Structures are given as C-alpha cells and as structure tokens.
Image 1 (cartoon, rainbow, N blue to C red):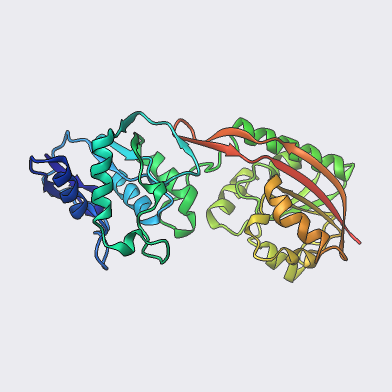
Image 2 (image 1 turned 45 degrees about the vertical axis):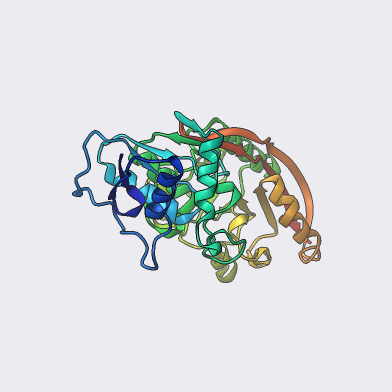
Length: 348
C-alpha cells in the first residue's frame, strides 16, 4: 500500500504487507511527530502522487494548531484531487461526516499498542509537547469532504489571529444565518426601545461588516461605528456607501474621548476586552451590552456588581435570542450557539 503523508510535506511511504500490528507501528513511526524543524511547509506535489489517489488529511478546524495547519495546507495543495479530512480533535463543533471507519477490537488494540510505543513524554499530562490525549484517540475514525474555500473558512474561525488565510465573506454568517438574523433584529429593536426615540447618537465599537450598523441607522438613530480590523473596516465602509470608518478600539475610545454619545453599544465584543473596567472611560452615561448568558453570568454581572458597582447601575435586561443549533460553515460544521442577553447600565 502506497501512502502519501500530507502532514509531512507529501512524503511517500510504501507500507509492506504483514501483520496489522507491525503495519500500525511502521505507519506511526513514519507519520508520528516531526523533529524540531517540523514538517515541510507545503506538501510537494511533484513527488509522484497518482492523480486519482484519495487524499486523507487533518481537520483545518482541529484544536491542535499544527494539525489544523496541516489540513489547511493539504487542502490548498490538493489542486482538485479528492480529499477527506479527519474530524480529529475538534469538539467545539459537529461535522457533516460522509465516511466513518469504526475499529473492531483487534484494530483498536493495535492502535493503542502502537501509541503506547511512543516516547512517554508524548503521552504525559503536562508540558507543551503533549501530543496524545484520550480525546485524540478515537475508536471510530470519521471523515468529511470539503472544498479548499471551506477549508480556509474552517481554519479562519479558529485561527484568524495567525493571519494565515484571507477573511472569508461574512465569516460568521451574520447576513445569512437565521439565528444571527434573529439576534441582530432583536438587538436592533431592544436598542431602539431602550432609547425611546430616534434623536440619539450611539457609538458601536467593533462593528465588523455592519450587519447591525445598517439596521440601526434605518431606525433613525445616528450610529457611529468603529472597526480596528482593516478588512472589516473596508467592507463596513462599502456597506455604508463609502463612509469614513474610524479604526478606534474600545480602549482607544475610552482614552481619547473622541465620540461623546447618548449610548455606547458593545454588542458581542466584551469577550475581546482584556479589562472590562475600560468602560469607565467611555464618554457616555449609558452602556448597552450584549453577550452570551454564560459570559454574562461568569464575567459581566460579577464585575458590574463588584468593582464596577460604584460607577454603574443595572436598569434593564432582556433575553434577545435563546440558544440554538446552527451551522458555522453551511453544510460542513454546526454547533450550539449560546444565545444573547442585553443589559442596560447607567452611570451612577
């Protein structure tokens, strides 16, 4: 059997006939952890691969960054060849599997024995080199087929800060997902009703592509969006007919006091703040905050009832959308989206 190791630069090995246990050991030695230099950056397509061979690769959304990157590079290099990605260690989502290989007792024992032959530190419970955990050793190997564009989208959702891929169109489905549309519609109505009219100015930091900005402006409110990410800022500007979009972060808005406003709307961006106390510096007496129920209870409410309690008073609360199952990448991966709660805080 000839095997192309897509995670090792496309190196080809010929797996000789023989007992299952021996073949498993050979494959693990050949395809195991790379040396200090790591595997080659890109699979070598000039290494004699058969054009009609099936490729098998890691999941571009694997929780393990090296494996995810390997899956991304394999998808790019496949160049139209059929390729299937292992679900792997990606418990954040469910994947639309089109092939599954449950292991029988003998096969699973061979797999476990081969893994147990690895150097002990690779199975240890500490250290950055840990490679093998219970969650990564499946008794049923599951695979799914995707396009290179879908592979880029999956990788972006987990590893956007690494800058390895371009920003996909509407990466979180804000314009297409029924859940996201319901959340945005409910947020728009809540903001409008909380303010009680149209003659108000709202600053919306982290406005992304403007999926909420435009509907808010359509209600008659004056909305000043800011967006520090260059590509999202360009898309937001196009959506708002070429408007100049300030790049300020929440921290910069609090420091510069550039945009005094009737309210600041921090919609689903509290997760990204290093310190919630930055809201003290925002030039407003009204905060409109939205976040998941879990984050509200674990971080937002404790801070506002503790360190922030002398400065802010909770005057309103509304469940905007309940948790719901929804696709992250249509037809490929889905998960439980956590819902959204809106909180109103007024400066004391």
